[in-house]
Image (cartoon, rainbow, N blue to C red; front, side, top):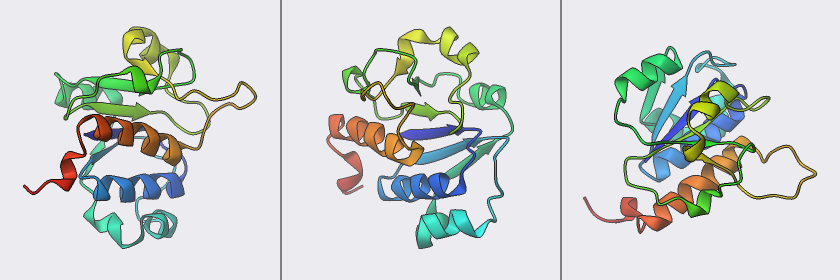
Length: 154
């Protein structure tokens, strides 16, 4: 599977997500601009010694990402939909995209893809869950549906 972070802002979240990606054989895609340098010690601290093992792809823009992945099935994690992440039938090479921590995926992207917008249910008082927690929740649901393929010998 693939995790896509669109303009991530907090290095600790990206480091945590990178660690999760390594341990689940998931590719991590980062779409610029990033709110930090990949050389910052915070990202390496959060990712521990796993960071150097991340299958990492960096894109200059969302358009470049789309052009390089023309047949990708992308699910857009957002609080602006009622479709639960657990209602989706994930496939092995699907992409799950998350927006910047402070504002989420731009509405113009969401509006073009309403059938692929997914949410994690929560009580109405909060704006959103932590990015790295959200990525883990949705990724593990997809992997559960696929019977955790990374645990099987290759």
